[in-house]
Image 1 (cartoon, one colour):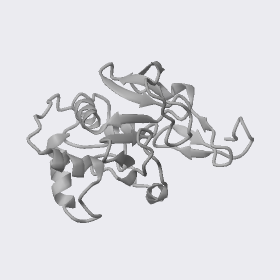
Image 2 (tube, helix red, strand yellow):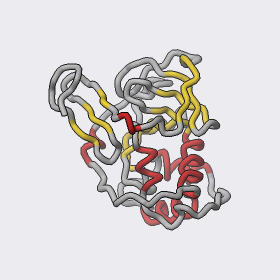
Image 3 (tube, helix red, strand yellow):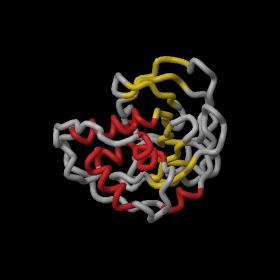
Length: 204
């Protein structure tokens, strides 16, 4: 598909359902992409710009409950780390559709550098040690997670025994453990990986 803005060939992010133009930075979303449970309320209470495309962020609600900052251009979202964990847990527990096929981790996404929309300091870019094989960006200082469009859907669609369980498991873990599992702090590439996967199996 060619970019409607500059005519260049667009890259397809098939697992997430959108096209991106590396030449001019434009995004294209099919009409079937949907809003992924996001309802925009209006301009952000404090001016913030998107970590990906530098457009102004809007205030929105995810699943009619969780406040987020949302980019109407690239459809990325900035969400509190603990809210992110809760949303994943609930969506996977109540999923009724057939799980999607396993998607390999795109190691190239680990190379990007984003600045936190709130504090403007560099975010940590790392694999999400849960289902879906996605790369997420988190700010430990602000306790925020940046999600590109389709990443939450990819996480929820990934196979796992917690999917469709209809049970919301009570958290019996410390904030430090959750920080390591979701925010990327503390563990190296291999250190504690088994513990993380066990935690996410129980937590999500």
